[in-house]
Image (cartoon, rainbow, N blue to C red):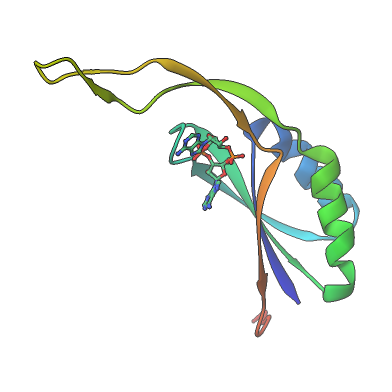
Length: 109
Ligand code: 2BA
């Protein structure tokens, strides 16, 4: 068994959960925050049998879209007086950031 940890954009989360559930996967949704943008995103935990792993990944790949977002650059030191400035930069977020873990045991009590 594998545990898929998928960090996705909030905009894709509802549809992704629906599609995964329709295909019989168990899903847990966590409300999370990205460290760089400091904006909300969604982390899904999906436990899948090895023979269903590819099917689950296909659903994630199909639903999750990459999008461009504006973010403030990290502050940079400028001038001699130690003034800090930041400027907007464009970043491409997603489709999905996925971690795959092997599961030792899956227990329901
Ligand atoms: P955030 O940390 O808010 O990052 C949002 C997007 O900002 C990233 O999209 C990437 O395009 C950009 N970005 C992140 N760090 C950057 C940096 N130091 N300099 C320039 N641009 C940077 P994604 O790569 O698609 O990541 C989407 C979200 O997935 C991240 O949101 C974070 O919540 C999670 N994530 C990505 N890589 C991760 C990792 N190695 N470990 C844990 N979570 C991760």
